Image (cartoon, each protein chain N blue to C red):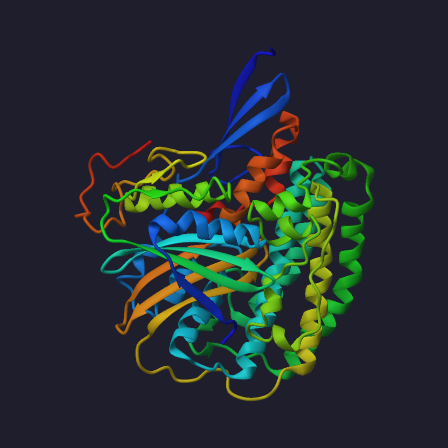
Length: 125
Length: 359
């Protein structure tokens, strides 16, 4: 094992509060990434002194809007735009919102669980 | 109020052969705001993991980048090995570390050449790349490839380096050191280079950490954070400390990379002296089931591979956070206040690899 990693599940409405705690403790935002299983999971990864901790929210439905953490970690806007463009997850109050033009994909929301793989209106720029 | 002009920079630009676009908001010659845009060549390689056997996917991971390809393959292997609880033979760990450091050297030399080209020092550019060729020759002699060399595999490595060759590499790098110093001294001492880099694109210590920067961009502002200190592969057996500078400007980012070149030579010398005999791979059986975030230090900084598997031959998810992606916010924040003429140099100081970012 190269390192111990912590994974903490949080509810969507607790997310900002928890992220703020990590910010106050001096953690660096290492990454934000989304995973599609039976539900959608978003991992918020933080690092401080090589301690790697992940917050995980689960999104039961693609229609649920989640808050942006870019008001706490400004750099989060890149990760959030990526998630928004690839999965179609709605994220409110991003520091910079590219409104679907961050990635110029042929298929719109290519990682979206409801995506059938057809193209067409997908070019979003 | 001074009239504002928006200048489009990229995705095709003579100085920067990387498909990134910046909308530069200018007041006269001064940049007041920069809005980045990528996504021109997004390849969806992460999605491909759902259709490629987890053993075979190493080849795809290596092709995420044409510069730090080996470390991409290595990080993917570490992620899968951690999930499967595979203990790689010690000799394989050492070989992985040697190739990682050679990759770092040729990447930093590539960057130095591009930087010299960006500020118009053509002879320095050519000498730097001449030195890079020697590193590529070592890689070619030990793997058969020059940039993408397919030497990492889940469970170990595909090739060995015999002890005579290791001694020869270590010896040749020691003599290489003095020749390299002649060139790096130009970067460090030449007044025309200093004029273009010192005090340009300053990132303050607190600011760069807050922005989530990694690698030389982070260390040049005084943070001794280097993912190699996690001790993956054979780094746990090597004596080294992260290289830092404190001024946070373009010059500091250049100096960090130069010092890391010499550090890599020292690390390879240590590895060549300590590498144990033994097998270079173990047989991998079964399928991965679980998840792990593998982190390694690429030339541009920390890369994160998140792998999630469900017991089949195909991973459920692979998410790659590349160092360039993490450094874009720092770039956006360092541009305001600079002159338009400095923009190409500033973009280069984060050593952008958009190919990585557009995995």
